[in-house]
Length: 518
Image (cartoon, rainbow, N blue to C red):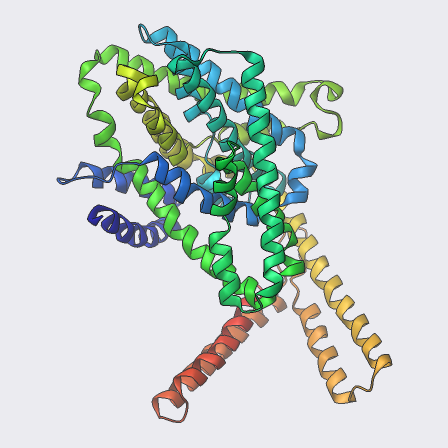
């Protein structure tokens, strides 16, 4: 318990420090946290070892749920074929290739055990890649592919892992049985996610209080996971489905105050969990290395190197294949068409994370046998090489490839949508004036505010740079707001304003500042 508390406190402090270092050095925070975890793991004292059940039940559901809430359901549906090919086909191919390679290089290793380890290291973790990609200005289409793959590949990997473990412990293998188990897990997981999302949406009708709504939101990711696992479906897929549907429907059934508070709380949860996850990755080194003394150094090096090589090479080969298949074969209108720059960038989005380590640790001794320490080391090697190697070089690669041009068009669409929304509000105001008497000064004030919102919208030029008036307005208003805050604090300190009243006025200023153009 002490170790967990220390790790949590260290994670919170190191995430802040890593963000500061990242701003100065451009080294991703995830890489810095993993390296910090490595140092922490080598210090004297007992380390916090990964408990696979805790990670799969308590850590991954909220992380996946938050990612799904922020993903684009329509965008993922529009790119269904490439997402499916990456999240399902590529994961299964990587698991089989890595398993065959391990069975070839490690004497006596059963193929099923190798495939189980391959399934553990097959799914990329999108957390680091998305963070780096968004900061580097990666085009929206590639962000959608990374999101869709990262949300769905964990369910594929865990199901493949379960099938491989069943074969390894003597359950026998049947292609039809394995396919049936996979389809059953996917269907039941999807249904569980939809059921929970529907119930949560219905319950929110009776929870006008943002605090109650926020409490329900914090419980939501665990409900579909537990329901699906209870009926032997994919719990992770259920979480993703529930998050995608609730995120898509949130503008309709959730109040503005609830959305503001929910987003703030989930950002905090995600902030802390991500820090703990990357620290845990680094902290596992002593536990992983401890049992390697039984194996020849040559076998350990060959197994780890071959596993890493398969993981790194299969992805670009698969992307190149599906990118050049004839359109009818590749999936008609869902066929992915990546140019060589996008292909290279997507090939380098392969960072593995804590789910790979948790899945490797979850392999029972009855399946892995005496090979378990070696398999754990191979999984750790893949995670470390991809997080540190690919994670630290992804942003420079994106900039070198010049893949940030598509961001300007997306920003222009945001501006156009903002203006369209303001105009819709003005049309509604006209209708209300016809329906009932509205004082002229009230209507004029509302129109003036709407006009100012349109004027403050950042119009983008050919170079994608916002015009000076919008940026200048935002900067001047921020300085005015800061002066207003100082005056309110002066009133409070002089005894002319209570603390609750100060917080009320401060919240109004905070919300206005949040709406200013960046």
